[in-house]
Amino acid sequence: MTTSNLISHISHLTSHNYAIIVAGGSGTRMGGDVPKQFLLLKGRPVLMHTIEAFHHSNIQPRIILVLHADYHGHWGDLCRTHNFIIPHQLVGGGETRFHSVKNGLDVIPGNTDSLIAVHDAARPLTSATIIEESYKAALKYGNAVTAVKSRDSIRQKKEDLSVSLLRDEIYLVQTPQTFQSAQLKKAYLQPYTDKFTDDASVVEQTGVPIHIVEGSYRNIKVTFPEDIAIAELLLEDHGR
Amino acid sequence: MTTSNLISHISHLTSHNYAIIVAGGSGTRMGGDVPKQFLLLKGRPVLMHTIEAFHHSNIQPRIILVLHADYHGHWGDLCRTHNFIIPHQLVGGGETRFHSVKNGLDVIPGNTDSLIAVHDAARPLTSATIIEESYKAALKYGNAVTAVKSRDSIRQKKEDLSVSLLRDEIYLVQTPQTFQSAQLKKAYLQPYTDKFTDDASVVEQTGVPIHIVEGSYRNIKVTFPEDIAIAELLLEDHGR
Image (cartoon, rainbow over the protein chains, first blue to last red):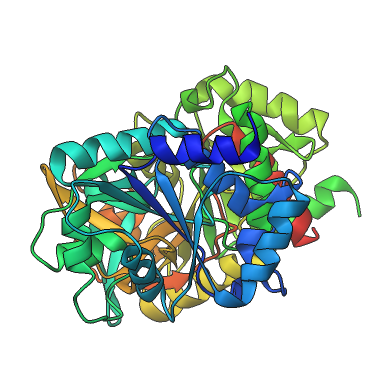
């Protein structure tokens, strides 16, 4: 099978569901010039691991990569260097994560019964199981937000005081966050506020109840330099 | 200075404040027979790193180690093997963390103006800075609970639904948790309930407001086997 045949074959399979991989932002928190999604994890950019996880799941969604326009050329170079041929559509990033996701949504046709997962580019350790459970639950409940229970006690701070919350009720939110297309598109028509820290908070604002599915403590976000070494450890342990 | 002189000298300096290091429990979550506080971190048991952190802080508290009675002999052997001579008082663990802390409190004299820090044995990466800030803030505010802001969005789940909480208000609680002696002792006279997930929740139940001090994301709890490798990475990065 030639490369172009392969791409066409895959595109056919992935025509119903979508995954928006959000790599917007300048990545300055890594303390260097390399945005975190390009850092090498086992010799390959974080972002390639992330895209592969979706591509290798049974869902095989159509993949939309939202990336700051400044990096489109660099990403193309990386794909050639690493012989990375998983088909995906490249879209420019916005001012905030909200605006980046909105840019991704803009290239998805309306009036479909498709499901759309939104996923952080910097979560390369997501698994086929997590991805498949997310789409399955979104089909059933309208949406599905991947989250893990807190392993720590939790306090809510109001001014100088704090109160304890019931740990069993508290979830740390990850991605993927998967939604019925119409639900997500409608939510992203709202004006931006800085309370929108993830897609679930945007959708919730329209009055839609949010359904949680259990993720994994391994599904970490690469945010600080030491996280790359931790991700490599977890990858080894995972036997991938 | 001989060993016995050293111990006597240190004991004098540490006569005013206390640290209860809680290693109770069977450690079954490690998936093996070795309780997590005994696992080797850079060649030495986790618990030795933890005790050293307190001993090397400027506070130099009197150290009380709460450990399941079944392990007292093993701990003595480990101390001899590793030539570990930091003075500490060994106390038997209780049925839950609450009962273990209570056992530790029982050996601290009442009617003093001392400060008592409670710390998880399985948090070996706590630092002198964190420890000193905790005692300082407890002196000023009556108590000080080490915690870090959540890096993830947070949801509170009630039955099948969930609501987003303001991420900036949510803290993941760590240890040390430090208290005025009378405040902590009074709180631990209450009957046990399973809502007591940490010392702050016990003290809060008596109506005392809880003060948060910023901890560190490095101050992890060794809970699962992969955490040892992560802790070693963080130790290397820390340059200790």
